Image (cartoon, rainbow, N blue to C red; front, side, top):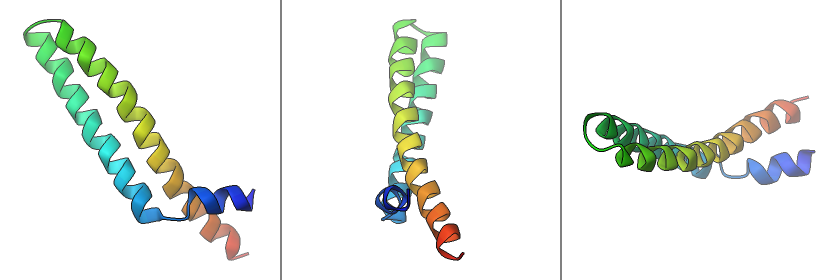
Length: 77
């Protein structure tokens, strides 16, 4: 388990950058959903597709951050 945590959390700055990209895509997806509410409904479909990819990217980045923190906690024991 420590090997997996070490691999996932080896670069927390990169993981933070991946998380922030996912967060930015998430806000872009929300923008397209709001645009589709006021204009054409196909903008909402684009927004939902972007939201799916944004959640996956943000989850991957957060997993790296969490693995790094957990590895630090476990290594202190």
